[in-house]
Every structure is written in C-alpha cells, then in structure tokens.
Length: 149
Image (cartoon, rainbow, N blue to C red; front, side, top):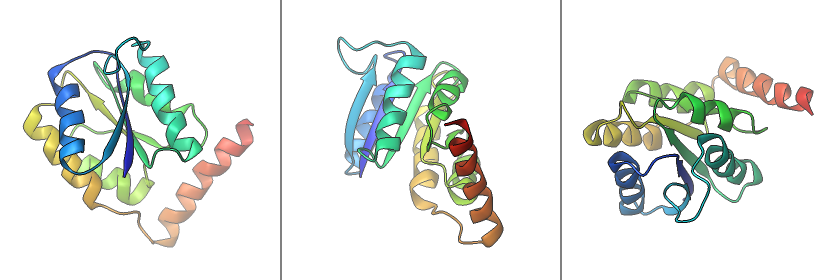
C-alpha cells in the first residue's frame, strides 16, 4: 500500500511512524519536516499528503502535528478525505470501520511508540462496515464534499 505521511516537526514518533510503516511493507511518501527542504507547516504538509489520497496516488495518509488537530482539520478540507484524529486503538478501529476514514491524524505530543503500534494495528486491521446505515453516513459526507464544489 502507498501511504503519504506528513509531520510539521521532525519528532521521534514521526520518524518511528515512517520506519514502522516501511517495516509493515508499505511504500511511504514523506511530506513536511520528514522531507528535507519541504515546507513543514502543518497546514501545508497535511494538505499535500491528503491530496495524494484524494487523487488516488496514495491509498491512505497519516498526518501529524503537535496535537493532531491542525493536521486533521487541514486534511479534512480536501474533498474526498475523511481524516480521523485517533489517540487510541479503539478510536482508530472505529474510524476505519464506521467512518471509512482514509487519513489517520496523530498527535506528536500524545502518541508514544507502543501506542503508535497499537493504533496502526487497529487502523490496518479494521475494514469499512458494510452496514447500510454506516454506508449511508459515509455517502452523506461525500455529498457534503460535492456541495462545497
């Protein structure tokens, strides 16, 4: 799977994230502070990673900033992106299952290395729900994107 990763800071958890994704066999494209010479501002690098998902050039993205909030807001402004700020494995599982989230947002401040691995395990294990109500909710979010255009 091709995964775009962005971080506004070159923090240990961001580097561990890239290493962990590669160890799991994913092709990683880095943005922001993880890519020498790139603009590290959270709005800029989160948008860049999210646009890859929206364009179909990346399967998913992981966007990071100090709290994770700014990265998730910026990513969610890109039509077709459903970014979820996840601080634990249960939230990551639910975001994938019920929201069909395609962008994971993480807090560099709150996410430890062991927690990161738990979140990634849950994120990559869960699949989108086939429940009609869940699918309708995701479709409604998609229509909100179309309304903005």
